[in-house]
Amino acid sequence: MQKKSRAMAITSFVFSLFFWVPLLNLFFGALSIYLGIKSLRKIKKEPNLYGGRWLAIIGITLSVIVYITYFTGVGMCLSGYRQICSNIGLEFLA
Image (cartoon, one colour):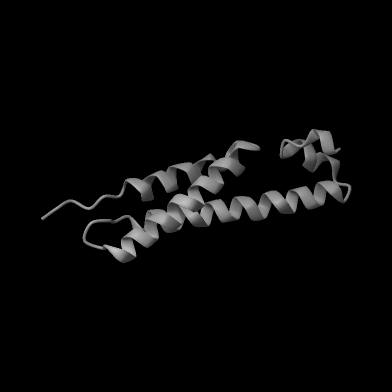
C-alpha cells in the first residue's frame, strides 16, 4: 500500500499558524487558503494518493478567521478606535 501524501495539507495548516504575526499573517493566510483548497481538490480527485483532509480544513478555517478579525479591526480602526490600529500593526492609520 502506498503512503498518502499530506504535504500540501500540512503546509496549509502550518501557514495558518502564523496568525499572530501582524501584517505577515495576511500573506501566510492567503497561502494557507490557496494550499488548503488545492489540497482538498486533490484529495477529492485522488483519495488513494492524497490525505490530510482535516489539516487542510483547519488551515483554511484559521486563515479565514484571521481575515475576518483583521478586517473587523481595520473597520474599528477607521471608526475611531485608535488603540486597535497599533495592535494590528497599522499605526499609520491612527
